[in-house]
Length: 295
Ligand SMILES: [Zn+2]
Image 1: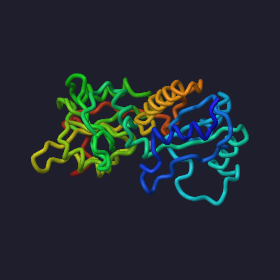
Image 2: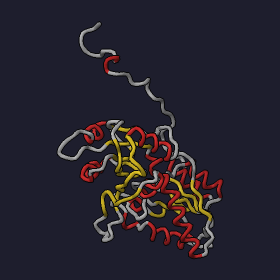
Image 3: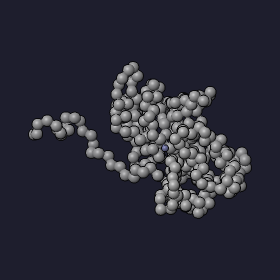
Image 4: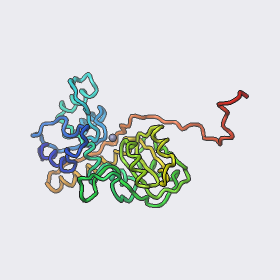
């Protein structure tokens, strides 16, 4: 059985911590480097229900995409939610390791897994990492659909292919527009609108889109037709990475004869838990007047 320090060294090769953004907090949150590792659990969020799942599973290491502490703290008291996670893990000899923006830009990274879940053909990174001469690393991916679809069809397709969440998928743009090329970026992607527009793709799938940036992004300016937008649940866009990451660690384990058992959490930790569609949209002529003279 490998020591935690050996497994962590392997994870740092897959997702080098020095490639994380300056504001990020990646790496090992807790764990004894000399402890032995047999079971590893991968999950998106280091929340209590995932820590409890790691305990039930008998995991020795929990690898999450999101950091537990993004900023400094002065307490890990179990009366705080994050402190309780730390207590739960340490009490059960479970290490916690985070691969966040260093996994986003890796090759393969978070957006490769997202593109894979959608069965897309990956062409190149949306925002290439200038330090990678091969041009394979970077943020987001520009892809081709397996076959052209309307935006409405693509929305339903993405909802069916990504892990199920209460939110599902919503789209912005003409539902009948034909989509052939799609940029994807796991997690919050609305800072990438300029790159998406410059790439000239038909649509962009990401998460956490807000009214004003989305409304502006689909307005026509210049020569390129603005991309349609697909807004998925943040968790759903990043969960496919957990399966990819577990498979990567499996390969390392096989190479070293470690015999690690890797697991991927199926617990949905997207914070949104319910959704109701509005009454069916009616044509403008049927819409009650909300302004003008009272009738
Ligand atoms: Zn995220």
